[in-house]
Image (cartoon, rainbow, N blue to C red):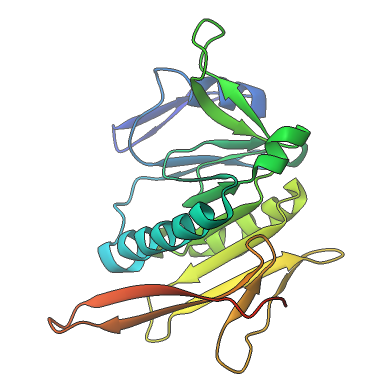
Length: 229
């Protein structure tokens, strides 16, 4: 029986039997500060690949900026990115999504709770437990099947109300918004102008990109205020 898993002599994961053991390790000083290591339904998935500048980093930054402005207007909830661990025991899941949004309502109801770093340190939290209101994932070359199949199924099982999938690698920019259906996520259709309705933000949104005067990609997440889907 294996006692640990070593990747590229940079990451060593001790043998864990279940989600509880993985969470203990992931929040310990032994866990690496770089790379993404997820526990998805009994499987540990490691991705040490660097983020692509234009297909991952800049598009993620634009979404954070745009959604952050919406949150300042509506004044509720928390938007976080990178190294925010989200664990959902009911779905056997512990992941670090690209972007996470948690509403005050979810925190107040106890649907989502913040796990403290230590009991002796107030207002210091290291993990989110329970389904966030929104999770956004960006497709990477190293994790296409995971991003497009395994994670959406796991997030649905966990009870995440809204899921976004973004793929900026090809000639066509893909921005899918999914809402929960009876047995799986269902894609939201675009309107005649290409906007899609987000129930979480009660707004129509459209992600676009164009090349600037230097020939480099620039992303823009636009909001339309003409109400509901």
